[in-house]
Length: 170
Image 1: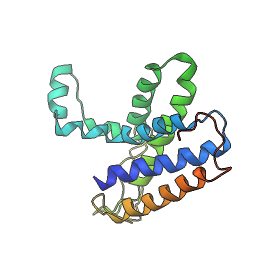
Image 2: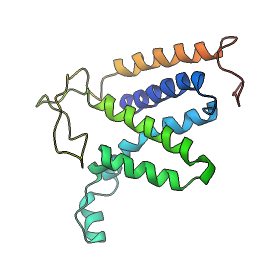
Image 3: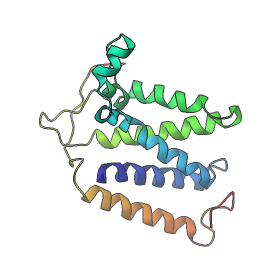
């Protein structure tokens, strides 16, 4: 669970800081970026329904892990984009993509026994980039560190003159 919290806090911090620069990024859209950070972890649906079960139902090979790659996240983001009104698609697409990308980048730093990450760039390449192995997904310190950063960002935008009043949530 600290891993999922860390991904949400990273996306919150990124989107909130971008809201300082871009007028179209009202605070209500920060939540969209945070939702995008959860997209790669949709691969954990395997805990509920095994990929083999889905594959046999569809009649094609299937593995949930594909969602935890660049290609799978892109497809999931596109599904999210078509579910919103056409005037919101550019915003939603960019924020979902930012959240998903921040998740994939953060996971590329996970400690792995083989010192290489998973094939992040699939289906472009099967290459497993090396990982610096900074932390485990079960470590609590990344959640604490990202929480401190998110708290600082929150305080920054809540100070007088911080975030322009464009749909600000008080």
